[in-house]
Structures are given as structure tokens and as C-alpha cells.
Amino acid sequence: MSSADPAKVSTICRPGDSGLLLPLFSSEQTWPDPLRAVLYCFAMLYCFLGVSMVADTFVEAIDVITTHKRRIRSRSGEYHLVTSWNEVVANLSLMALGSSAPEIFLSVIDLFRQDMHAGDLGGATIVGSAAFNLQVIVAVCIGCLPPGEVRSIESLQVYYATAAFSIWAYAW
Image (tube, rainbow, N blue to C red; front, side, top):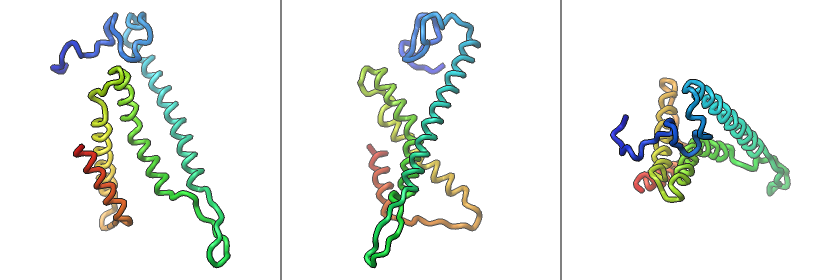
């Protein structure tokens, strides 16, 4: 157990106490712990199933957007099919949503728990998690390169903008 203030330690497992969502009703705390653990695991799996359905729908929507083509006429009068969206931008949007959504939802829950006042899980959690995600993703991508293979950044302007805003956010 940590040395936190005993008044602030969560005790939702003790009869009479409650958390934000659990226990769902007061008699639940009198149930055997193994039964509650199994029920909570099933509830968690059900939530994961819901998240996977939403993610699948989002991926399908991104696919529809990125594969949409339109016909344009060039200066010479010929018609060409071009994609409406840049595939890189759509995929980066998906990655940003997927990596930041848990922290955003955690901050929203904390906001409701604090009666709409900023808590310990606010912007710092989101920025810190984004920094960790960015550094780990870059490290894994570098580590996965086959020996002797070299990659380079194609668009340095985007890299510089991302680096500048990241440094600003981390310093903030």
C-alpha cells in the first residue's frame, strides 16, 4: 500500500463505500470476491468488444474516405482519377485517435469525479502519454529496420512542425 492520505485512498471494495461506477448497487459488496471478479472480467470483455466494433467502423470509414476518387480535368483537357484524401493524413488521424482516446476518456471521467474542476489526470496525463507514445513508436520503428537498411524523412517541414509543437507542449 502506498503512503497516500488514508482519507483519499479508494475503498470501493468495503461495504458501504462506493466509486464512480462500481459497485453498481449496494448489495454487490456482499457477494463473494471470486464471483465479482468473474462478473467484472465479463463486463470488461464486453466493453472491449464494443471498443473493437467502434474501431472497426472507424477503420472502414477511413478506408472509404481514402479510397474515394474524383475525376478532374487537366490543362490539356484529359480527365484523370485522383484520390480525394491523402492516405498518410487519414492514417495519422487514426493513429492519433487510437493512441490518445484512452487518456482523453480518463481525463473526462476525472473531470466528472472532481465536480468539473481540473484534477490530477488532466492535460499533463494526455501530454505525457503522447510524449511516451511518440518516443516508443519512433524507437520501435527504428529498431525494426533490417540491418543495413536506411530510411529518411521525406517531408522535413512536417517533422519540424511536429517537433516544435511537441517541445512546446512538453514544456507547457
